[in-house]
Amino acid sequence: MKKKVTLLPGDGIGTEVMNAAVKLMHHVASKYDLKIETTESLMGGCSYDAHGTPLTDETIQLCFESDAVLLGAVGGYKWEDLEHHLKPEAALLKLRKSLGLFTNIRPAKVYPSFVNSSSLKDSVIRGTDFVVFRELTGGIYFGEPRGYDENKGFNTMVYEKHEVERIAHQAFKVAQQRKKVLTSVDKANVLEVSQFWRKTVKEVSKDYPDVEVINMYVDNTAMQVVRDPKQFDVIVTSNLFGDIISDIAGMITGSLGMLPSASLGEKYALYEPVHGSAPDIAGQKKANPIAMIASVGMMFDLSFGLQDAAIKIDKAIEITLDQGYRTADINLDNGNVVSTDTMAEKIIENFDKIL
Ligand code: IPM
Ligand code: MN
Image 1 (cartoon, rainbow, N blue to C red):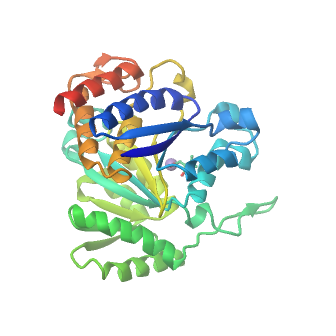
Image 2 (cartoon, helix red, strand yellow):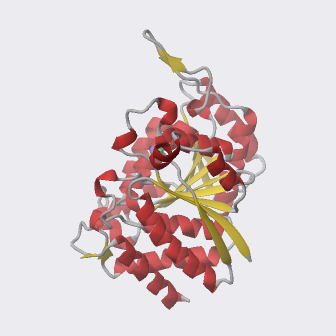
């Protein structure tokens, strides 16, 4: 099997974690008789510096031509004062929209050796394992009209029926394979767009009679995720609410540096760590490559149908953490501090032991 992967390392620590993860990717691929051809391109601040725009048409075209896209991280202090449409973050939104990546999947899972790094106590956090399905190409992020002048600022939160239906189907399908409980998060006590969301999810639920649906307001969800995260299995929600809930979910698992994500559409798929570009530690080989590596794991599973590879990558990460290896950013319990590359090498070594 042959696959084409576009690499967009981006800014800050993006390059370092990408390099480490790509080594692991080729290593794993070789074990499954898979040949991965990679092409690298600029995106974010580095693209702005080189081309005057954070995302060129050429880069988008490359993504169209590949089986999957791996993204490191974009942004940094250097580009913070640029006009809105030239900022690295704008490139991310444009790429999501251009590739039609309407489903964002963010797992929140606690590695046992990380329980002590969580801001929650052991009894509350241990065993937490849920996944957030965030709608990614609609809602208030993209709704029109939008803007501001001297006297007012405004955005529009709007969802069309097909947009709610397609993300709901994705979440229901995964819920069926897990604990068969889906929590749909909205603000239906105040917003009409949420009432519509809730009604549409209810209609879609008829196709999945074996899945129980729990409707929860977003403010209550924020509280429940911190109070008792184990109650959740699959969460489905809109773009803005998913942005917020997934950060809370990320934090309680111990470190944002551990969490991968997948963004999927009808045709294209993009995988990226949930963390940002961490300009303060860029170039120092301190960055934690685990989220990027776990994102590669999700790619093997969801884009290449190699679930076995994904499970083994996850297991290798777990063993490496159990052995006490830590990058500087997660060295909260005085583990054995290693560089970005060494961490990836240890994970590769452990991967080979599982085979
Ligand atoms: C995320 C980020 C982005 C978002 C920003 C950088 C545009 O916070 O991926 O969660 O809000 O979607
Ligand atoms: Mn976010």
